[in-house]
Image 1 (cartoon, rainbow, N blue to C red):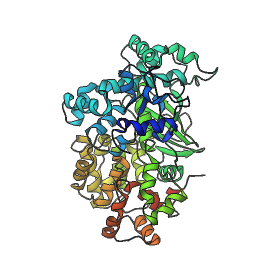
Image 2: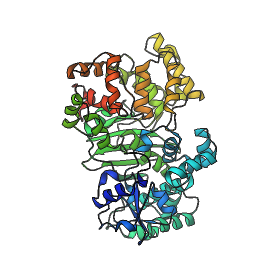
Image 3: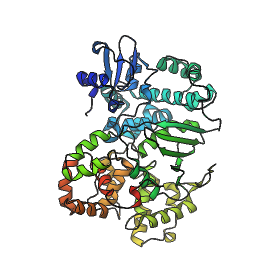
Image 4: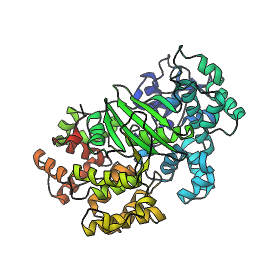
Length: 494
């Protein structure tokens, strides 16, 4: 699949006529006769091709005066895989909009973070998505509002401000315009007892994904490397604390056959869209597994691994700076030792939080808190202490910034310039924190062992040359290669 798929009318019509769910989120179908827009897999009878027109985003449909279909709910389809597989300006802008920057800092804040003028950003987003940053943020606010209306008993005034609207009137007008129903009518359509529990700040929702999704290495990795106090595996769910713009949260994520069940406890409901966006990124839910697996199957030595357990995702993170710190703590030590180091820092420097279910105690320490740590108190070799203190100091003072908007190559170059940062550490951060789908770890011991076992070249140079055929999905090849080992990261905990 490629950028601008909505311009390939014939292909879009075929996807709509076959109700192909793989294309949900790639483009949206607007029906000229009804003025309604749908996802490609909408269950209703497809309209005549001459009555269909296609848009690259829900925001573009809304801006053109189309309302969301009440049957297929196109606003709840998985996000476009493009924003997590590209590192250009539009992709970085979309990741930031998903992270709520426009609501918190406006379009000027978005432009500042990206280092471009507001005019350049608006022009590029309009050209590719048919909508500017304000329209895209508005579409996200509408979706958040719908989620709160349908999953909580909160009064509408509270929902309006939690979803990021500046006034109740704007909230009412937007919901009516996007969904062709008032907020009260949206709630009235729910079956009795479906508006969620009345526990303040607790929300239960479903995170959609494109099938297939193999949860084994995804949740196995998160559970096996969980830092006590910050993360845990409990009753079939991965739970962790979240540091968010307006407060903190606790999330429980449970894999189900057709969605991820997500239970969020938030200290401030305005953090809902950001929390959802970060959880989706951590679980790589916007990936296109069919495109990834098809590419990897072209290598006969990888094909059997893919066929055995398709749909592997790359386990990522909710906090890029946290992951970079943990990558340094994990250099040349076992998974258990890395967890122990991290747990000591959490107890000493993390911010305490209340967990109604017990088990989670702290937020992972911020770079600012870690920059104040006495290096002599760290139980690690002197060279690694230098690596650790340099990293946290640069993260704290802003010399180094790791975030959803990071330019992957620029971030790699900055990390490589730090003492103690070699290719393995840089690429594991690129893969799991920055989200580069093509990051590769040819020097990793587990990868080299798997390569040898499969008959792939096992020296880093030769393996890198062979892996050129796996691009741009080498980070997914890493997951399949790791999975040949019996390490706990590869298995869903029982």
